[in-house]
Length: 119
Image (cartoon, rainbow, N blue to C red; front, side):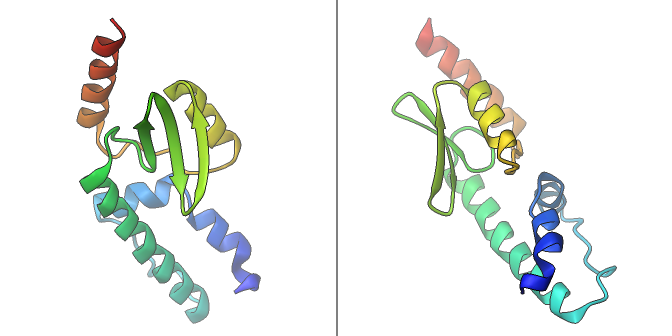
């Protein structure tokens, strides 16, 4: 699969997660059979991960949890931590990783809850 590294890297982005979340991801334009198979595999992995986030995530942000007062971005064993959500977002984006708010209502409730706890 190394010949498709660029295509796969480009596929693993916020726009892809958004299209998966909205149910509009279309791979019909991909002509190479091997590449299409690889992208379908990653689509399934991301779809499953997004479903798990809907069930278990407490922030509304893909791969982001608040644990023991720290914000953590977890991607298959790789972890980025920060003291604030904005600091975490900056670190995640600086590493070209996916930052996607999949549930704005949950995020608003989470931020409101954190403000109440701080006050």
